[in-house]
Image 1 (cartoon, one colour):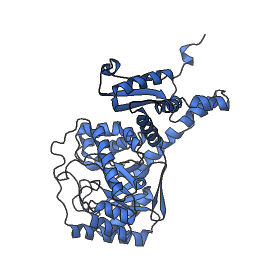
Image 2: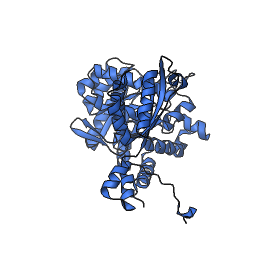
Image 3: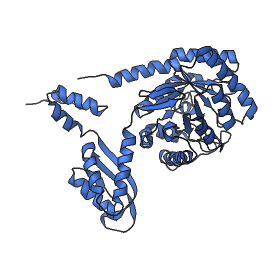
Length: 407
């Protein structure tokens, strides 16, 4: 008789790990391959589906050992649209999609959308061409923050001279950063815009000197929402544009990115830095931000930007309440449906202070690492941080644990 000492709850971080386990307990190669297709169980929310289609979807899902939660209005055949939750295994989902393609009431379109979303959601490796170099995002990369400003919220004034900026860049590269993000204007809450020429004078000489002294084996991103600053920075040696406005503050920014054919980080922000924290409100922050990205990406592509060169940043702390920041990190996987790399910049931010009571930004490293950890586990591919050394050690340990092959 089997006692409770012989019972375990097993969890697997990937289908490959699940298949390897099946082999280790004596399954045949073919049996392990078939059984591993049951991993994972997808929970797919579908909004705006015809109630008639919802009933067909439920019946088709049930016929394949899945299910679909439909509202009462649909089960009572009330005309209109509704939201449903489809629950099905990966293997059975493929069969369901084929059945839906032959059904009426808009289900063929739903089937194609499901295929596209699942393909995006499962994408785990991104390769981006950057001026002849390859930015390979298989594992999370560290983006080191280099503020060449006198008034940034955490390190304002520390690296405001070219020599100090170059030295700090070198330190971060040695500590494990692979991207250096250089900004010449503080975008902390309440900050005022910097004149165009002043921002150029702060940023361009630093980029030029870094390239001259440290080479071009690493990536430089320019943190700006001004098209002219971005263009000057790219000419000076920058590789990536990091725009907090998602191309919305300067209508020419998308054109510059398209012209130079470089990657760009598009961030979500509500309002502008000067007023973004004045009572921001969301009904459902992650969903609203996802809708923002869908529209912003579409507009960027129409202006010639290559979709595959975009990186999304939900904008922790930029026009967000505490609960919004927490929910973005908790539900970060929802942004994977876009099929683009996710960047998270939570380092030392005020929401950590609200949670922990720590008022000094430089002392928020433990909270920053907690945010980084959940972000990586939920799909983030780039971490924008102040504390590179600490983040690298934390990240190496986290990945070693999650990738360990355990019996």
